[in-house]
Length: 211
Image 1: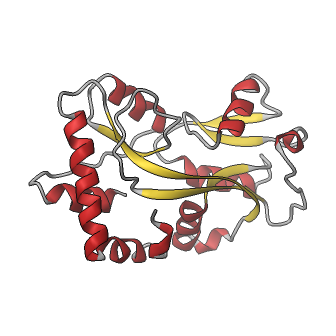
Image 2: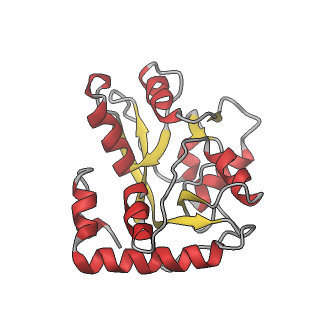
Image 3: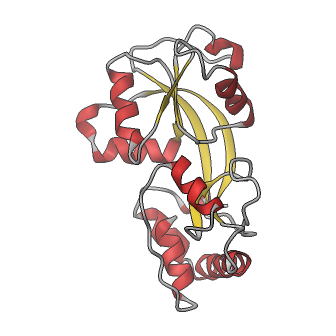
């Protein structure tokens, strides 16, 4: 999505500066107008933000476990005897978000990770059996495990949610609405030229996954 944003905005002479920070902090700074936008937002986890008409990708959230686990997901109630690991401020699905919010004070049910690079830590905790289940986007997990093959592959227990995913803009900056429109126009141009497929192929994602 960073690559897509850079090429889309380059068409109108704008340069994208990408800064890696925790999701919770990114939302806070965007809400305060300190940064222009956030990358990787579902429509439900950045309320009040300005969303482009065009998504920058398509997310498929799955539940990952240790490869030796035989646990089967059969709905939200099947998490009752599992420890779920979540990243602070992330949205996973309406149902799972509600479950996390309801059990934040129970570390036997929900553990929350914070910081700018929590994914590697989450994978490590699953491998060490210090937690049971971790929700993550399928393509993000694929990429992480290709980059660090020595960690081995986690088991996908279920796919629980699919949604378009966006680069959303701060409602507190005077250019937010315009940037959302420029991004949509840029993404349409990248789709029409076939450039979207070329960008995504670099990450092992098939172009039809872009919707």
